[in-house]
Image (tube, rainbow, N blue to C red; front, side, top):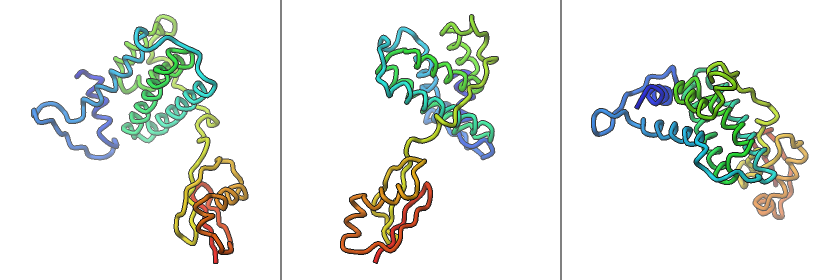
Length: 227
């Protein structure tokens, strides 16, 4: 399987500080689940093949910002998880970004936004899969202009771009969850109360019953007390 696949497999087995059980497939030799890691690196390699994927087309207005938000969220996640040595969750974040890149290229081709995000992905991957990341970097012609990927700066992320556009909050009526609503992270308590009280499930539960108070627990839930 090679050094990159083996290293990534070991790091993906679980938290770095936890014990891990080395399991093998029925043949008694092949490490269990290593095929999934190999397929992940193959997917990354294919993303760096200019001959694959449709020709670039103009993306719709929401596609490029959505890809860039996904990229910044991945950078934030990988950065934070590496700092606390949770390498398995860092790899999981890179797998998620790879899926976003595949879906974007399938729809819009290798646009400038895609190429930028792909470059970020390779820089995130480089400490984990040294050889494949360097080979992919070279395949894209970046080594000629920018040198080795292992001297490229670590990607930065923007707090503005990593914020969720909406958050989900449970709405309880007398302690029982009736519905879940989505609101802006910046929504005021008054706006959240209004959204909760106008939700169909809450309206039905409160039919003919006066509301005594509405308690908002920021970012988590709304509790409506009636009767």
